[in-house]
Image 1 (cartoon, helix red, strand yellow):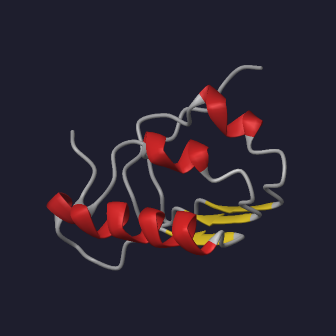
Image 2 (cartoon, helix red, strand yellow; image 1 turned 120 degrees about the horizontal axis):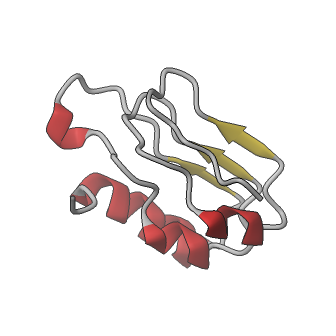
Image 3 (spheres, one colour; image 1 turned 90 degrees about the vertical axis):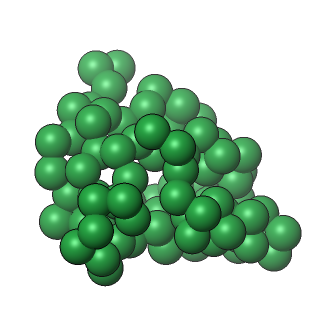
Length: 87
């Protein structure tokens, strides 16, 4: 599945402003607006401290999340079907 445009725009804005927070929460009931995977573009946000992924149908969390060493707050509320990395 491709990443929805709204999510790519938020990621791009966070990258340009070197933001420490990224809100990718989903307020829509439309399956087309929900994420099934954490967008790989998020891994380029090395300054990220807060990541909100609430309200999606994520298949799994990627291993590369562990490389975001500044990440101290991570919201998966209202997110279903998440499988976490084993290491």
